[in-house]
Amino acid sequence: MAPLLEVADVQRTYALGSILSRHRLRAVDGVSFTMAADRPEIFTVVGESGSGKTTLARMILNMVAPTAGAIRFRGTDLRQIRSGKERLAFMRQVQPIFQNPFEAFNPLKKLDRYLFMTARNIAGLTAVGEIEDATDRALRNVGLSLAEIRGRYPHELSGGQLQRIAIARALISRPALIVADEPVSMVDASLRMSIVNLLRQLRDEMGVSIIYITHDLATAYYISDRIIIMRKGQVVESGEARAVLDNPQHPYSIRLKQAVLSPDAAGSAGRLLAESATAAET
Amino acid sequence: MSAAASTAPVLQVEALRAYYKISSFGLDREVRAVDDVTFHVNANEIYGLAGESSCGKTTLIRTIAAAIKPPLRVVGGSVVFNFAGRPVDMQKADDETVAAVRWKHLSYIMQGSMSVLNPVRRVERAFVDFAFRHIGKRKPEFLDIVRAHLQRLDLNPDILAAYPHQLSGGMRQRVAIALATVCRPEFIIADEPTTALDVIVQNSVLAMIRDVQKEIGSSLIFVTHDLAVHANLCHRLGIMYAGRLVEEGPTAEIFKAPKHPYTTHLVASLPRIGNTAPKKGLEGTPPSLAAPPPGCRFHPRCPLAMDICRTQNPPMVEVLPGRRVACFAVTPPGRAA
Ligand SMILES: Nc1ncnc2c1ncn2[C@@H]1O[C@H](COP(=O)(O)OP(=O)(O)OP(=O)(O)O)[C@@H](O)[C@H]1O
Ligand SMILES: Nc1ncnc2c1ncn2[C@@H]1O[C@H](COP(=O)(O)OP(=O)(O)OP(=O)(O)O)[C@@H](O)[C@H]1O
Ligand code: SF4
Ligand SMILES: [Mg+2]
Ligand SMILES: [Mg+2]
Image (cartoon, rainbow over all chains, first blue to last red; front, side, top):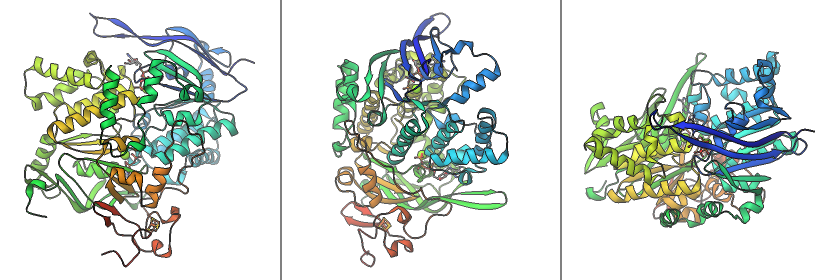
């Protein structure tokens, strides 16, 4: 059986600067990993801001083409997906959740319409009742309901509510792989736990594999099976998530873990921040 | 308020109510996103705001920053700024005065600010438009200041030549922070400014914000869901639930001994590296602010709820010096002064 996902030595470069001083930036620089088809898992990507995590996600979602290397989903090279039909079939199976819910929605479109459109176009449902049921079910998975959002526009909702709707939207087509780019960065600690518990439940009960991009090492520790740590486009450390986070080996991973702020420092009034910032410079 | 103008708070928010009034399908609906909130922020103070998603934090600070657009309306209470002993009531002052306060003294980093940059203009243009007049230096010196400032945020100054879509989410978020702090404002209002950053960069950014704040003794309202950031940054903390402030006090005390049942849950729910014990989100659903539960808005989810909680709204009571809590289990009814 072909693996669910194979990322083979992918690279993505961008031209930067003015036409005169062109240089190329390697946003993703030789990343490889494989996710098995018969063993759903939560595969976590952490790393420096600007290290290529979102670019990697966009390549896996077939929104950006690799400059070199290949990505295969269930054995099919993403470059071979051409017709609208193939594209739809791919989207049904691989769904995104993006970083910033304020950007993910069209401000002029009512949210329920948007979800119905997903149910119709991507999940392929046709009956109105079916479409509404699937939408409501997905919304209930994230602690909302169709009744609550009917007729509402994105700006009428808070950041956390929008992000939950983005997750619900990804669930409608019952995908095999979800690529979640910082899905919990905008929600409160309690909701954050319910959402990562939900990701775990999707893995365990629906067999969905999840690529979880995050800056939150605590939730990464809590739900991940495997982890990669990225810096400047490259993977600097990878392995079983708890082993890596318990005992990081690469100097960058060690610094990253040390920089995690502890709530137990309450009252230090920034002392730790100052120390951590000076440590980062040296 | 006392005669000691010099110690008067820089910001005094009094019984503030701000509602969204919407009519859809001929039905009028009122979302009571900020309902009777009172607090103040002193000079040289970092005040943190935390609370459940959609409890009204953004609405509260939007109202404070006078960024009020329909359907949001202030239906009661006041927001008074006091810069250099000159109080300005933002609801009563004329548009010109409000605009002057916003332009001269306030700086507001909006939630999701990474998406406010104009997509067709290079980052440098945003700095010129936004800060050039403020800083009042010649162009080369101005750009030197901007470059140095970007470096404090771990950003390569070369990004001035980039378009926003060429930057990562966290890079754009830092550009928004740089824009809001390069002029060293006296009052910074920041809504989730570091959510898209790795922890190393986040700490540099927080340290920069703190340095700027200290250098000129600014005040700062800092909204975030990341309680560890609050713990490390803020002098005092206000906890909101369903449009109301339910607890307030010095940061260390709130973490050490939370008193309101919602705060207790919040502090207990923090995950930590090395800990995989199952943690649950808060039971029950967040209350609708269009039809909030009567009495204490937390009662449907509160493990300590009593009969009175279902009918009466617990007042905010000062239970210790500088420590206020709105809960009948903390202040039994009748004992509130
Ligand atoms: N369309 C583009 N054109 C040019 N450069 C780009 C483009 N998209 C991304 N980059 C660059 O590629 C690098 C990686 O960006 P990416 O968004 O993948 O980072 P990231 O790891 O997701 O960061 P963050 O944690 O801040 O979201 C950055 O230096 C960014 O400036
Ligand atoms: N323009 C609007 N019209 C109608 N309702 C709105 C509007 N903006 C916000 N609301 C509602 O007001 C309530 C408070 O929203 P607000 O954005 O202030 O929450 P928040 O505490 O900042 O949440 P988060 O932590 O998720 O950002 C929510 O129920 C939201 O749906
Ligand atoms: S007032 Fe009652 S319901 Fe509200 S938090 Fe206190 S005990 Fe719970
Ligand atoms: Mg990103
Ligand atoms: Mg908000």
